[in-house]
Image (tube, rainbow, N blue to C red; front, side):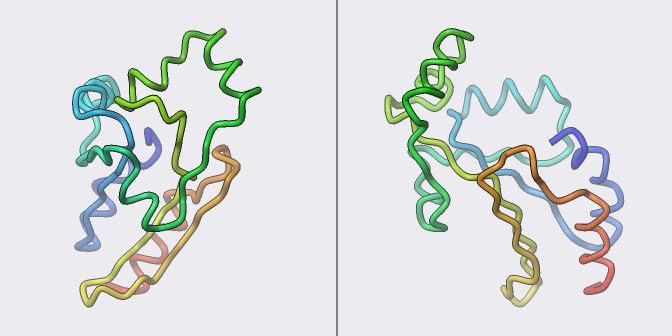
Length: 126
């Protein structure tokens, strides 16, 4: 999110807008938005309803849940439910006509598209 935050001016120069969606509560999203001084909206997806429509949800495995609990990562508090469900990180670029022109979804949360790749796609379409 920090890398994308730095790219916001270039994204906006292409005529595009950046929006992030998170299963965190509105309050937690506000804290994150404030903490990272995000220049784009961070929308709350209560219960992963939107993520589920895109087929992006998974239940945190018990071993990972145990690690989170030991590290004091309180997912139920952050997300406002006891599901221990998260979305797979995904990026979509949707053009003005509603056509999806770029998709990236990877279960490995450390593998995400670079802002430069997103900008390149936007520049080709602007």
